[in-house]
Length: 235
Image (cartoon, rainbow, N blue to C red; front, top):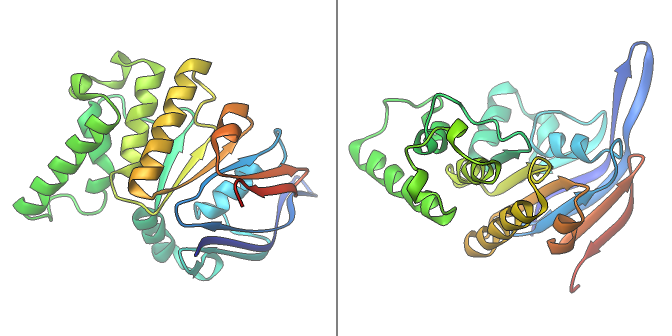
């Protein structure tokens, strides 16, 4: 079952008075539980596509459907709720909050818009879930450490747990290994693959990292805003 569908999607940006095409007519489907790499060189359109799937941008033409909803038809509130309830984000620059420790950074998305409104039972369940995620990403010993006390790999592990804390159906990762050395990058990708198998979470990567492409079950390659290859391994 497709959880993301792009149908003849085009995206243009204005550079001064010039219209620049970033995506030129792209169609594909992503199934629930996919571990997919959207690969290509800089300027190929992969980050633009990720931004549209993440409801941070809308197409100039065509249709983007995420979890059964056409993102172009949603108002601001509906778009915000779709992002919050359905999508987790992992950034190449980690984007942790420096004044918060590991536990607090992971907890933060659960507090957005609903701080102080949860029952003690829900708060207890949230605490157990956060502690489970911290164990899953191997950071129990660093639970009270702030981000400046962590290595790059540890920071990305916090970011992975934070992306999962709202139990999203989809996790978007924009060049998640770009700021990591190759060994740490491989460990982080293997961790995400493990979570993909255990939780059936759909992972969608924007990358030019051959390691990420190699471990993906589904690979879409882009060049100049067009798909050059769409392969589902084992299909």
